[in-house]
Image (cartoon, rainbow, N blue to C red):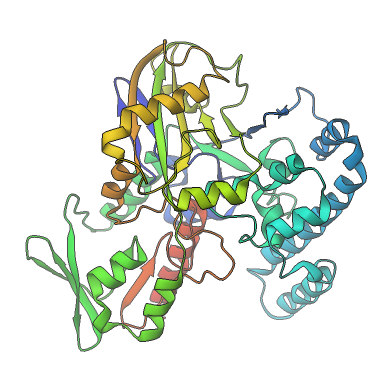
Length: 471
């Protein structure tokens, strides 16, 4: 999912967009420094826009402080002014609590105890909402359905309903720093308001850098080679059997990918404890995406001033998620995003031209027809929806690459493609890194790490450290 694909001189990422954790001093950047490859993964600090049928908000030309969006929303919704003040007080409390949690992570001894006491005090201001869903939180703070969607709309990107998303997590998925890069960010401020960055040249540079460490230290990378099963002997993992029947022995096996594919397909239910089988079967997965990659011969910035913008088209988030899960694809009517990677990475397009990504969440399996049979039709409809914001996309397209859920299933070796792994649904409990089978570890977006590049990286780092310290 961190690959960069190319066609006719254009390049596009097929997964990550604006990432957290890669600014100087932040978690992903520190991992790259630890591996000695940070300089091979340059990034640029940026932000994004947000557009709704009623209005759009773009970073103002002159900096107006960390709460400029709150003040703009008061102008648009004067009857909600007091409600906006209340919500932002809650937002600040949660940022303080999350910031203390970040600072507490490396602390030890008395320092750790001091942070725990401060976190306990900070938690008192929000503990009454600890069992609330995102929908309940929005209903508590706002009357306007538009404002509720404004702050919570991105949960639809996880194919998670407002009634399923943990309410205290709302500030973390809608940080003000995502919409104005001039707002002071972590780690300089020791605040949980993280900086968001693009990886220059595409996310393939991240893969190449980390794989370079493996190769430089005597490791091997076998591509195009399917794993048939994880070999178990005496209750422990001793290697893997490849599709051609060859056995690769191993002291430890680290598996990444779909939880059902790994545990049920490669290990086998007969080798798993009943409680793990139940846990895996009870987890809800995300759905997939339809991604249309375009190479265009004009500058889109007069229409979209930022490289990335989310376009929300519906206020019925509950219904949108429910329909997706039943295979009812919205064809772009519920929303999508437009991303222009060549604005920050000119190497991804020929001179004077631009690479454009249009994508939206989509069901893994369509209720009507198949993705292969409807691929071009549904891609045309998504591009047409995007043309309402960037006119001329179809007529001035030089090349086009369409990626459907079927393509992603093949890329990720999953029977059900889950674009972001395990969604942030209350009650979900993905499998732990350390499995009940000795010397078998489970990592990646469907493990306890959960999805997102930063989460997967930090989860893998924790596993590596546990192995190196004899677990």
